[in-house]
Amino acid sequence: MNKPLPSAILDGSETILPENASAAPQHKNVQRLLQGPIATTLARLAAPNMVGFLVGSGVMVAEMWFVGQLGTHALAGLALGYPLYMLVMMLSAGALGGAMAAAVARAIGAGLTRKAEDLGWHAIIIAMAVAGLFTGVYLLFGGAFYRLLGGAGDSLAAAIAYSDVVLVGGAAIWLSNTLSSILRGGGDMKTPALAMLGAAALQIPLGGALALGWGPFPEMGIAGVAWAALIAFGASSLFLAVRLFSGRSGIRLHPVPPALQWGLFREILAVGGVASLSPILTVTTVVLLTALVSRFGEAALAGLAIASRLEFLLIPIIFGIGAAMIAMVGANMGAGQLARAHCIGWTGGLAAAAIAGAIGTATALWPGAWAGIFTEAEPVRLAAALYLTTVGPFYAFHGLGLSLYFAAQGAGAVTWPVVFTAVRLVVTAGCGFLAVETFGLGFDALPVVVAASMVVLGLGNAASVYAGAWRRANAAA
Image 1: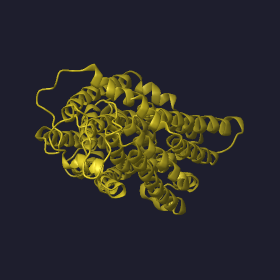
Image 2: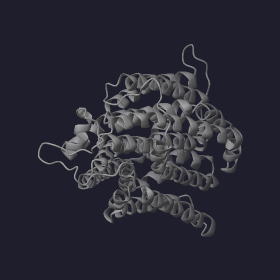
Image 3: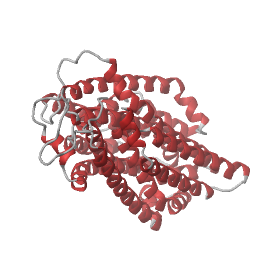
Image 4: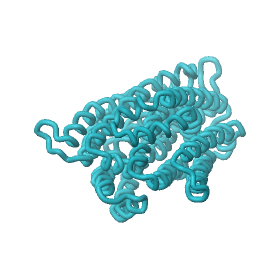
């Protein structure tokens, strides 16, 4: 990464740029990142993401409803298979995707437009390589992994039927999320949001048609929602590629890839490699929690699938704010505007905490309204309601911690967010195991442990920023 410039501070009407910066006028997207009022700009950039990701969350709700019509075994299978799908999503859009957006943002903040464009091609190559690696690992160990989690019979078959489609064809997901990250790094939030809206408009009806056999479509069961996802991501990738090759967003993918440079790969991977540990740890937390819950029966497992879907729903909403924070923090770090970067981080973090806390608290007050969307089975509804009543108010800490993780990607300082994600894993899995195995407590003890782990994540990430993690990363760059 280029060294930030202490002198590149707004001085009245101009910004002092590095000597090797592009002489071309800054695109309006870049000017907004570096000069716009923080709260207003953050809201304007986050709004398209919020709309897009809210619609994406609607896709998850629709998928859960479709699968719920297939029976409890299908819901339990989705509980087994969905964490790995979410790992792909969090890696491609959040961890490596966030690092890609951050690298592009820091380059344009420093005035290095051509470097930002070259980073785009390097990001695509990384994404395709990781997609292939992930598919290979699943094909070798996926079935054994689900059996290790307690999957058996019809629920195991459902998990494998879902994953054989959505994980083997994961390159479409990686490409779509990578192209979106490149555009967001350049300050264009609207085009990725439009891509998500279009994908959702295709995926929801197609998922129902393929899963349940509407009209002329075959009844494919749980595999149908997976096929609908891949088709939607493929269409999204085509739309985003056209936009990037056109250059209308201020950053262009040139038809001929540039000469590959290890330094550009390293710039993405130095942040993305460490950041990728966070979603891996997060999904490991969910997987271990799933294994603990499976000891209480299929109804409890299905209840967890419904209740934890709220957390998976909140992740895209928070990422709507986080994507804007990555671009704003990254560009301002690249321009040497450290104080402004910190202000962006705190503003976005508190906003995410307020939104996640409000949704979680509402769900805690009326848990039956959420659980009843997906199933009429009373044992499943009771398990989901118990989880949501306990955990719901603590989603504010989850929103704070996750949004600051995204902001830290823009700052190039992801070590502490990963550390506290690991601490969350230890609290959830370790204390959960002790509660169930050592003290013989019931299912109702596990939501208490999950709530405590969210407090650790939120306050830990906030403390690291307050203690100067971003300043140290800036000095070391």
